[in-house]
Length: 96
Image (cartoon, rainbow, N blue to C red; front, side, top):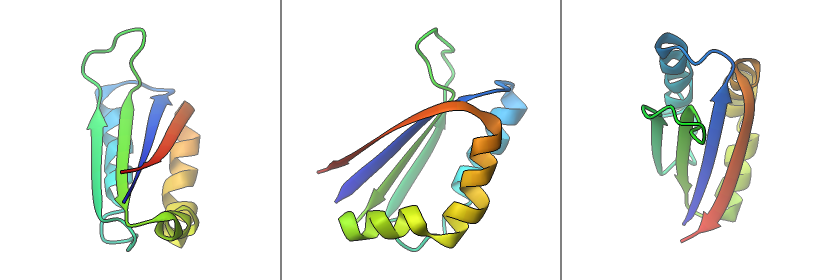
């Protein structure tokens, strides 16, 4: 199994904007078949080190991760939206 984690820093950190971005990420459920498990969280601490939203996606293997990365819904709907609303993002992928 592989876990794909993305941490987003948003331009507008308002509760409404964070919720809208989290909802967009959540919309991948049912649209991206490679997703085995998914969690989206909105930061509540708001420390200097905090990111605003975290996405955790679990996929079966590296082939599934590649398919997820190239999925049409992910690439044509979710990524463009997140690129518009984010300042930056970091990610990590690991096997477990």
